[in-house]
Amino acid sequence: MARARALLTAMAVTSLLMSADLGQCGPVFERVMKSGTIRLGLPYNRVPQGFLKPTGEWVGFEVDLGTEMAKHMNLKLEAVKVNDKTWPTLLAEGRIDAALCRIRHTRSVEGEYDLSVAYFFDSLYALIPKGGLKTISDFKGHKVAAVQGSSAEKTAMRLLKESGDDSAEKNVISYPDRPSCFMALGREKVSAWVDTGTVLLEYASRSPGRFELMPVSQSVEEIAAAMPQDDSAWRDLINFAIQDMAADGSLKKIYDQWFGPETPYPFPSRRSIEIWSE
Image (spheres, rainbow, N blue to C red):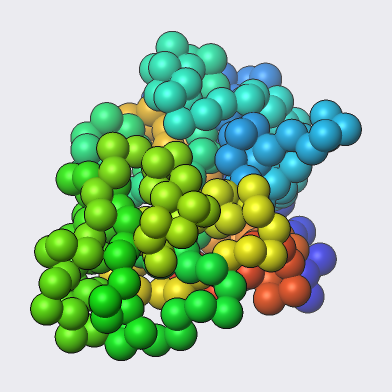
């Protein structure tokens, strides 16, 4: 079934290429189609999205996702190492065709770039010592860290108030940045740290087996691929690849490899990938 779906994907892509008038398509689509190569910006310093092992091997969820996307589009992959700060510049300068780098679908990002359908769903969690707090009510009387001015700070306040903590305002400890939050948690100055799940997974990986995640919010943050604006044919090709990977099971296979229950980074998916009808 998966092989048949992959064949249909390749046929659909081939049909799109044959029918497209490159003179009417955007510059990225035109360049990719002529070269047969997709230049994807992929993270190299974000565990487990993309990182370098001690051996120098470049691995990670978004690295594997980008590799499989190129296969589904029948294109050769040119992987380019990026991080949170460099991918916007590389994309703006035309040095990459798209970026997969834990990019959240927000209004500010949407105003600068085109974004694909979501391929990952994040949310706010609390990072806690393993075997520690079990339920929301257990947070009563405990100090909770959050980055100052972040949405996580408000969630930490709500969390403590829901636990019945009359000193919630006093017990939310705001820090200027994430390393400070993690240091406070490690030194037991706080009992929990509230932030987005993928960020907490990354920090927890620095002390394997010591921490675990607890969901503290029902809201979902979409993670998507970023592309230059106003190139609809290119955006469609990216979207079709992601949706076809969801349909044929290849995306789930990659997800389970990195975020399944038996992995070092267990992270149940919060939502299903959007798949458009034919």
